[in-house]
Amino acid sequence: MAGVARLLSSSVTLIGKIATSPTTNITKATPVLPTGHLHCFRSTSFFAKVTAEQLWKSVTSVSNAGRKRGRASGHSRKQSKDLNRGQVIGHGKINMVWPGLNAPVIRGKEVVERVELPPDKEREERILKLREEMQGFRPLKLSPLERGWSGSRMPGRSIGPPDPVGERTYENFDTVVVELQMVTRMTGTFGRVRRHKAVGVVGNGNGLVGFASGKSAEAKAALSQAENLLRPRRH
Image (cartoon, rainbow, N blue to C red; front, side, top):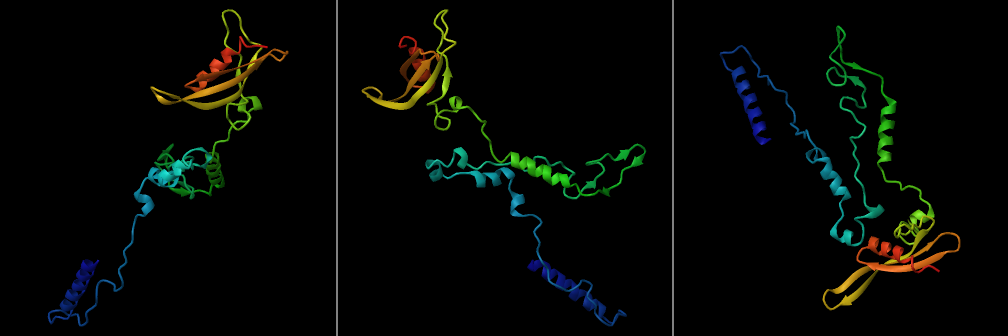
């Protein structure tokens, strides 16, 4: 900025000397450039220097301390939105016809001209509706046997009839999980070993009922083991 100011002042001084020289008919020095202050304007902002992904990451990211407290999962975690959804290039708040962008250049035998149309009031409503739909996920409404006793946990949920044995099937029976928890035991080779323990009850609704428990390294295998052990323990 200082260099530009010095250059402008030197040019004005040079023009003034030429105007007051005896070889010219000009009697008064008149500056060619207007006098005033020079201001510096930025054509870009901080939000134009980074991408949308980086901006959303700064809002939705969770620190290591927050991850330990469970802020990185579940409903507490903020979700990013695609703000470009529903917006089309060439269509904005000012409803304009731009030949070659949102309209053809030639229509029939006439050249399409740039024209401003009446404002589209439904455009903002459509964009806001799309953003509200992206706001969060609404879980489907499930029956008590499908969702469990507490939230979406396995206790209280139905897992269907036991597996068939040969030609014998158990279509009229239904299995309900009573308990599913993680247990540990100490071994001399592997140390502390974690396993899942499942307890289930099966019945046909006509007075025949059975119960059993199973243990396995995976929860699904423990449920399957308990479900299949119900067959010989019917009462």
